[in-house]
Image (cartoon, rainbow, N blue to C red; front, side):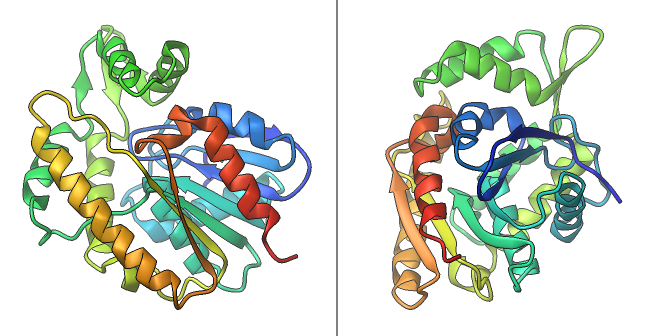
Length: 286
């Protein structure tokens, strides 16, 4: 049994499990989790190789799903609504797919968790950038730069700093090991490309439990030198939106929504995300 690092927020009511995105940690959920714990039993989990969780080799979705199941059992959260952001959103969908009888996954929420196939226009350029940055050693001023970048999205400095520190490991010389480390990061990217190659419709096939999919309503302002990514992400988001709209017309268990925020929505607008998740859970069948 492999247990993941988790933060138990307690609370009474429907069980919620919160999963973070790539190169992030459960600290991203701090503000939303505190709000949700008022009416739910809330557990936030670090994915393997992230935050305080041990790594796994190879890093594969089936192995991660098993790790999550073991961790939920250990914390007494056997039948949860699994809520994930970005990479965590993809994992939430895969967790629901692996548990079609709903004994473990009552429902799932995917917050802006989508990927593209390797043949997608511009994917090769983005893959090169991701490969170059995977598991790097960052300079001592890394945290300060993360806080500055977060300020562009209106994220308070204290929230941004706490999240950035939890998502990396400080080295004795003052530099920072970004997480996950390189070998696991490369495995994650392989898994993302595998899922992205399916396309949204095929990927969501056979997910029988209620599923809420939420897209970001605004794009992240491009960093200097990354202006090309703004066009890439806008085009991809629109294609995902069109495919979800068509799919939702024939899938009564699929709900689609949009939130007025950029990709890190649960850090940027934790109150709005908590409200959206709580309303979805209230509407679930008993």
